[in-house]
Amino acid sequence: MILILGDNNDAHSALVADILKSKKEDFCFLDTRLYPENILIKWNPDENNEGYLKIKNKKINFKDIKSVYWRNFNGIKFERINNDAYLTDMIYRERKSALFSLFYSLKTNWCNSVEAFEIHQKKAYALHLMKENNIRIPRTLVTNDKNSIKEFFEQNNGEIIVKPVLGGAYTEKLTKRALTKSRLETLYKVPAKFQEYIDGEDVRVYVYKNGIYALKINSKTVDFREDRNAKYTKIKLPKKVIKDCYKVMEILKLKYSGIDIRLNKNGEYVFIEANPAPMFIFIDRITKYPLIDSLIDMLINP
Ligand SMILES: Nc1ncnc2c1ncn2[C@@H]1O[C@H](COP(=O)(O)OP(=O)(O)O)[C@@H](O)[C@H]1O
Ligand SMILES: [Mg+2]
Image 1 (cartoon, protein in one colour):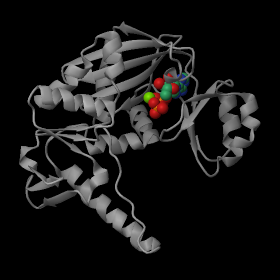
Image 2 (tube, protein in one colour; image 1 turned 90 degrees about the vertical axis):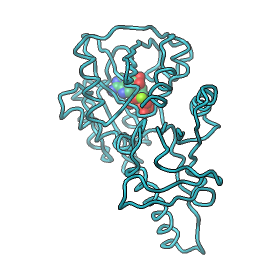
Image 3 (cartoon, protein in one colour; image 1 turned 120 degrees about the vertical axis):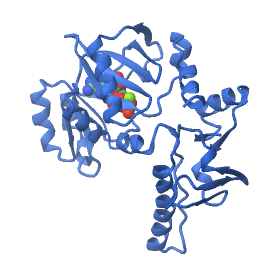
């Protein structure tokens, strides 16, 4: 049994499901929005992998779960209870604690693990961990004090970008004019992440158990996802960069990943982030790298 954490409306989850089906591998979606109404969980934390999930009445013993493909954690149902904020919040926290305790305890081939996702959600911490391990990252500032930005702007010769601390918006170059704009006035409410702008090209590296696949992305926008005419070229990485990729995987507890790197004009590889559930369908198709096969292989042959 292979669990797909996510749902059929997501292209990646749906594709993985289709392939598992064609290979006659037993699988089931675990869509956490169905918890608790349509997902029952029984387990004994004092024992090893003792328990079961009942997803829409399909019983899955923990012992039979070979792998988990963690694509999307769809969140946990948040229900307002009689306008009682305390009770509402408490029920939510109880549900979340039960589910996450299980994610941490269940011994199986997690691709990727809850630890890896928790680190990734604290992206600035992930950067800090990389830096502590001598991985080259951009100079970075996380702040909700707008007065600290001017200084950072000058330190980096006016070449900085801004992006969310966690995610959900594209990376933008910050101009001097933007610095005086009123949007900085809202910064004290919502912190943001500022970085030296790494002038150069995007490199994406897919790391799997059995292979490492790198490509260069030439785009006309700061964030390549905004450029529909971006060009994708396969490349070979220097040995030192391959070593750093594996080091990043270890530090961030990743079993496989899509790592974002910027290659600057001096030929330095600057690490941006390592994604625990990277998209791969489009890149697999364009480059013919065996990204889909590699993931499926990891799930079927742990
Ligand atoms: N410091 C930077 N300098 C130049 N480009 C950057 C920088 N940080 C991010 N980018 C560009 O923006 C993209 C998205 O940033 P990233 O940190 O990976 O956030 P996301 O979570 O949105 O993927 C990167 O792949 C890269 O193209
Ligand atoms: Mg990214």
